[in-house]
Length: 156
Image (tube, rainbow, N blue to C red; front, side, top):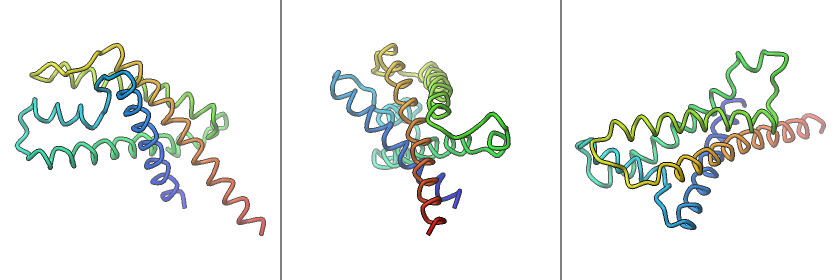
């Protein structure tokens, strides 16, 4: 059951975060769309992929990173700590931590890129940080929903 929960949480959290990024991108008419930025990086690094392959690869990579982050949230080392519980508060903290990791990762990728990415760094990193908070809160909400479902199923 835990593996299904992790996959569902990753799909929901990555989708919610991405929707937020796309809405902010459209609202401010800025390029804040992670999969599009990943395609830009693939092009700037001159990867031998067709345009279609870059689109598919960028989305697959985006969701795999989301899955990796969610798997970290569920690491047994955390779950065995007496002070750690999966909750809205831990989801908020988790979002802040991975927001910092996300900003660091994009900063490195942008610096390594032979071409300058078409982004406003301050605006992009601010929305990226908030998007990761949304990600963390979504992971916690999915977990709490699963716990509610399991509790309801067991009480029948």
